[in-house]
Image 1 (cartoon, rainbow, N blue to C red):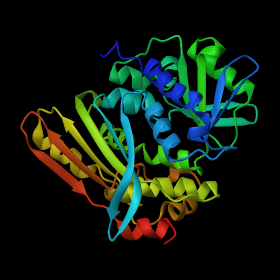
Image 2 (image 1 turned 180 degrees about the vertical axis):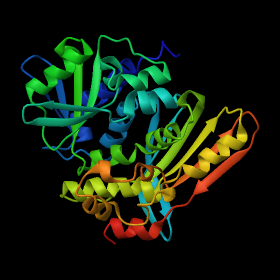
Image 3 (image 1 turned 135 degrees about the vertical axis):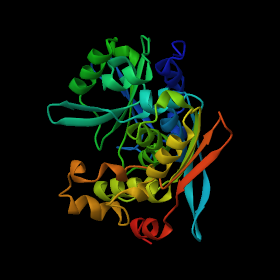
Image 4 (image 1 turned 30 degrees about the vertical axis):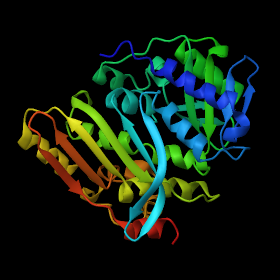
Length: 320
């Protein structure tokens, strides 16, 4: 399936945009001792919305687009990121999914982006979607409050089986503008992942588009993390075109898919997280879903919608 599509080759071109226009994007590049490139998009630099757009597209392995504009949530308009892809399984699960927790000494980072498709992290996803990238270059995006150690980067190049000079790592903390943008930009990935857990094969999803608000900046990591979750849970919308034979079954899946079906739904995520002793595994996994899902079945032309935005909880979360 799509063997010719190399998420790392496509993302490399995007990462080069950041490298070649560092002042414009508010980023800063440096080299590790071994020769890998690290691009800071928000740790010690300002980054910004445009860096966030490129970072989101890099996470998608260059197989999707990201655009920032304004959308309405109740009586308030907020900056929002719209993500679309014609390769949903590969872009969202095969690249963007934050499926690689990288630990080396005191250094811990959440790895996402196309490098995962070389390291096969986690392997089960690549077996399910039938994809493996072939590339001598790799791009990884790291969600971290500090720049990675040389040892952590070495772990990435080793897992990807590439020379250090052929790795670009783009780093942004959750609480930075670029970081908030790219995490809200996971809206489609969250939708596809939820549909997958309900039994809809990602390989049957032909096209996908979604949007979610980009939360306002705050210095506190935990608050920023909670707000990006709320942006998706209470403000996010995903639209997919699928090819599905059993339409009654499809309708049941769609009805179960939105965040509103969870027993933990209805409170700001920060409150839910703290009540769960800050343990993600104690939170009902059904919560991690967009507020609204719209699924168009190309086989019949019928379209199903479930869920709705919840501006009240969203505003509470964003500090209004």
